[in-house]
Length: 399
Image 1 (cartoon, rainbow, N blue to C red):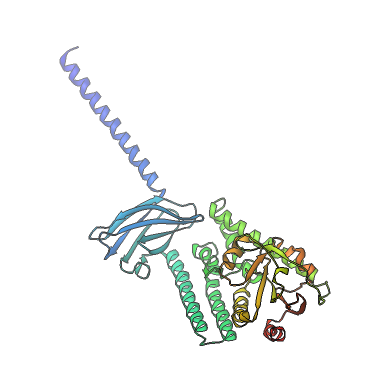
Image 2: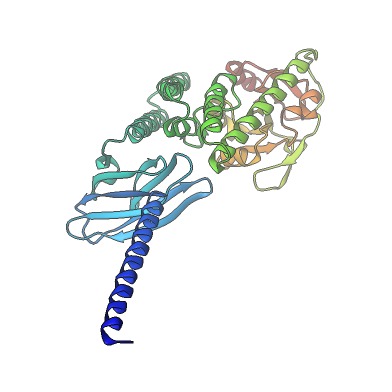
């Protein structure tokens, strides 16, 4: 073939190859662009944080999961990307022990600013209504927690009495619920609504899923999330949690209806109880013969429980040197919740795994929770107490 022909053919092939290469590069660019749409991006500026390591972490159902980290330079600028979640998901930025919570709703770019010396209070997400509502809930939870801790300190310093403490405690919880309920009712499908119903003060959920009045909040969020984000892990967990609480509450209501028809009688003799304590050891009621005992039937995961145990603790501290012991039986269906709540109580705590269907309730003719029995040193039941305001006076009679 003549040289001129070879040259022309070479040019044609070269031009064709360039077109193919350009086409492949275009496809790769489009593919990368599509892939980029499946991520969320967090970028921002952190002042006073040069040399610090900034961590991006997910607040998953199983706990905190580390996703990414970067050592901040002098200008404090950072960029992080992660796969977009299938539902509104909770994340945090962390420097040391300082954390700042935020929510990501699918694919988006969040622009944040903060100061490394005070990450939580200086943290801001620009133009993000979802994060503004989340922050609103978080700030009110912190405010309520601080108010309750201050109230507890006043009580322990004996600056206020039992009744004043319980009344103020209940008012603080009520005020918090009224504010948080506005977020839930306003948009039950939002991340802020989900976050609000699972807020805790101390070890207690503020909204009690086993309480008929509070359950409506869980039900609204579970229904909305199941509609908008079906088949996601967080939705399934929430829905199962809400349905389990509903079943448990229905069982309690049925049990209470049955117990209302059982005549209340005074039991002269002591029927023994032997159940497992927090550490798994079996503890017998009869083994306490020789002491004055308050046999207390209770549910820890109930609205009245914190105030109830505060009253008992006051009596216990006052009379334990005179030989008082408390044998408290929990009928909570959730064993883990009971163990967590009872771990630091100074008296004997056991749990009946039968929960509100336990035969023990019928055996002792208990139709109201909480109910207490005063047992003298000879091991005889001398008084049934349903109004705990009368408990101190009854103990004075036998101590």
